[in-house]
Length: 228
Image (cartoon, rainbow, N blue to C red):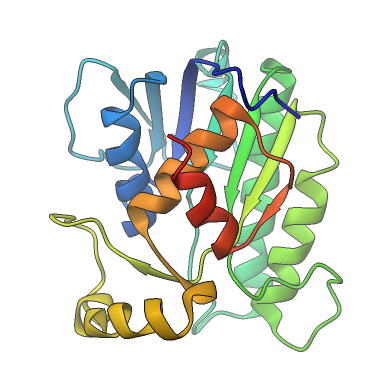
């Protein structure tokens, strides 16, 4: 674990920046003084311009050999790439949520042994890998196997309902329609809801200052977001 009283300046590799969660996390990274550089790895541009932001557009995340040398020299990864399990077979969901994630993570830890890997999982993830919910089993296996890789540290974030960052362009329509639920749920069920801003700040905090848990539920996310 890192010393929480010592702040590490971050050079971040980020995935999923064109999704709702990734867009919000990237927004916080570009605002935060502890983040020196951000390299966005994606299939299409995130559409942002910033002096500390660089992009690599790459179509095949299952084969990074063409860009592997450009992924060296970073000390944090914010892995926000993900997909819904709705309408997918277990094989299809496994390929994206497990196989792709582990391939990228294995390449990154090979070239960046001092890297801290922060992975967006989800509330209800099944660490036993034996539950009834397919997505939860796959996420659980992904979490378990990420922790076996030789990173300096791995943090697994399990957000529940998220309040999108104001002005976000990649918020799904259903999130906008259900946005009114956020405030009553924050009062009634605070263990299940947080803002996307809190999630972004918590990821930065874990990488720059460390934390005493590897698996972070919503209450941990909210607590960590207040440290910066």
